[in-house]
Image (cartoon, rainbow, N blue to C red; front, top):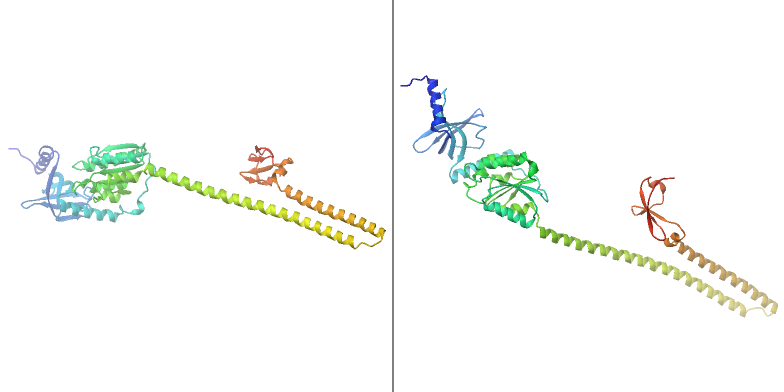
Length: 415
């Protein structure tokens, strides 16, 4: 018979339990009772069924999810005898709710905790790139969600680089698989401008990984914006609440990420037609303004000429009346006719000179007439330049001549 000290025996049993009996640990299902946290560090509870009970121990940094008495769970850990107390217990690494009721209750407890910590706050959610060039896809490549997402994305907007990581979306390895994918993309941000986490629909138990605290915190901690699209529109996970954008389905995730190419083309055509209409209206208005100005000038000229003609006619009538009343003597008649002739010539010359002066003044306002005499119009960026102090050496100007135009650069400013 082998003899042991107490310490040797406890160490031997623990070594046998971990290395021989349960080398991969143990998973035990039961109901939590007498749950308590000591000093904010240590977690103690009993796991029981109808016939037996086993003590469980863990630490708060390992079990962050909220637990309570009455939850039906699966405990994963390592059986061990504690040297100081001699008590047998399970050193717990992970706790998973079991059954729809327990899953629902665990979901509600964790949701309340994450909401209290601010993981669902709308203010922290980021907008998505309008036209992403690279998308990181986290999904099972064997799922319909994977193929649906890619099909809709390609139909709406092709040519996008898709970098996908295959993950388990349910089962024992799902949580670690999804978290590892987020870590990978955040270490290599050049691979994606936005991340998409997606899977098909399912029961609360099927969606357990998407309701896991580790996955929720991975989504929250991502430096790259995240879109989560799970199953059907009725499905809802904690990852949805934490994501920057929640898509109702995998297909909807693709619709939210990129615009429909044909819709965009139609919008551009509509905008183009509206622009043409606006420009045409502006041209018509300007044409009307020019026509009105021309009519005003023509009217002013016509009025001036007509006024001078009436004055000439009135003078002629006056001269005729004077001729009737001319004095009888021949000398007086000759003198009068001489005066009339002289006066008429003077009035006619005055009126002719006045009309010519007005015509020359009107002609001087014509830019083409000015340009024809060798002058030029200088513009900078479409505005007429009339002051040398407003332009610097080295700037370019447009020079309009009577025939053609030039582009010149200012080499000296004599202002």
